[in-house]
Image (cartoon, rainbow, N blue to C red; front, side, top):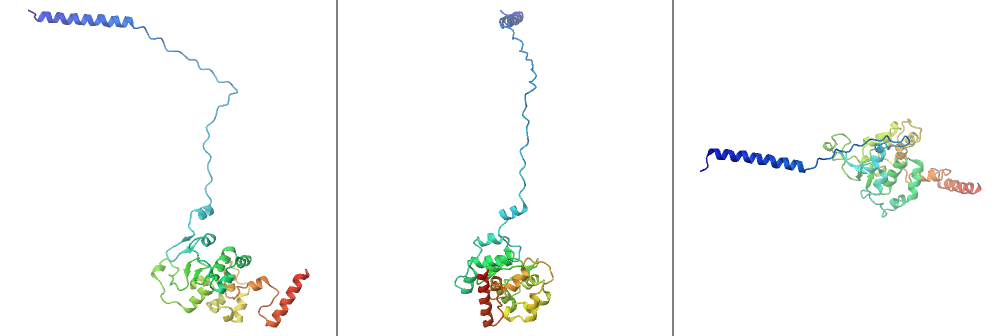
Length: 275
């Protein structure tokens, strides 16, 4: 019968057997070759190594380009929409088409009229005057560029203008909006700042309603403040032909009697062909 001594002998025999098998396996496996040794060669002296360069910096867009490409043609600061870009506004759906059913608006809507106005006024000021005179109700204020329609009740030009809306309008304000497009007394004062003594006698009046003394003030040199043509627009808007007759025919005295005007016209035509 097996006993405790036989089990110990078996364990010793298994250990010896395992050691012999491990030594046989190690003897049969060939030794690994040593890793190869590489020698670094120095590069030739005429070799040019590429240098990593950072990507070129693109110039930042100019403020004017950002204004034209990103900002809309109309924005609302809180007291009414304003026209940012006059040219862009004319090609947008915000602009009203010329009122061709009105004979006077149809006459002013011609492209030649705009070209003549651009010879006397800065381009944007000329476009505003041309737009206002070729539309019966749509207006752009030449001073603050507010877009509105005749008859609208407009908020005041203040930070809290929405809280102060004048429900009643002065008849002279309504006439001034129709004549020049200036939307408020404040904008009218800005436009007539060159002629402060003629503000009260010009407000809401056309050329035939202004006295000679006021016209002498308006035709004077002014105070030299520089207003981007607003003072000239103030005068031209009151004339029935916007002063284009004097602009195109400077030798004709349009304030003279009809007989004298015909005589001046004949002299102008004669002198024109004599050169």
